[in-house]
Length: 193
Image 1 (cartoon, rainbow, N blue to C red):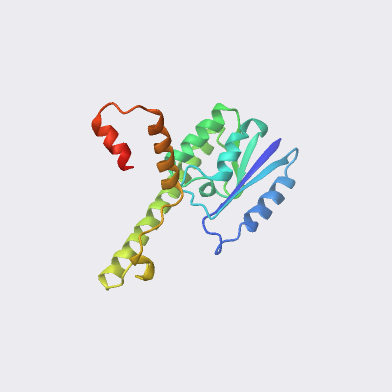
Image 2 (cartoon, rainbow, N blue to C red; image 1 turned 120 degrees about the vertical axis):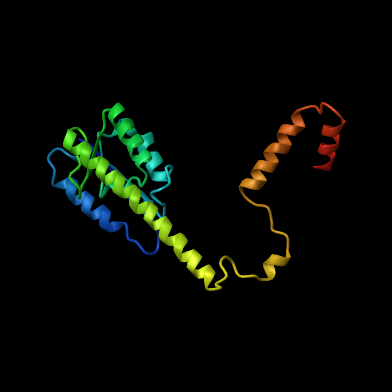
């Protein structure tokens, strides 16, 4: 059986991804007829995000592996909706899902019940983190702590337009260049750009 290993940590500097990797590689090596297809690692990416580079790649290669293995359920997702969508996709494609530290077998009723409970706890934990962060920010604000970037010399200069905004603006100009203005107002707007 070809096993796709998925590992994730939320922060790059404070958490070490090698613990999960070593544990899962050892777990696969102890199983009969299991071989590692690939290891997909997202480092510094929140589990609340549905689209993550390595998770997206894992799903793109779904026809190449038989089972996805994670360290814990919350490594692959924090929202119940996202977890259920993943499980539905795995089931539709005939793929299996396993958590090495939690006994989850979604092919049996007990396994699905356990999956549902853990999915609920993963979402609850994520919501609690958000609530604690917001409470901490509110407390700091009430004590007079100024939040955000410190005022400095950069604030006196207009900010440079970069990245997405520039691409969007350039694409907009290209689109407008191909369309003939319908009236005088559109002609005036184009000359002002």
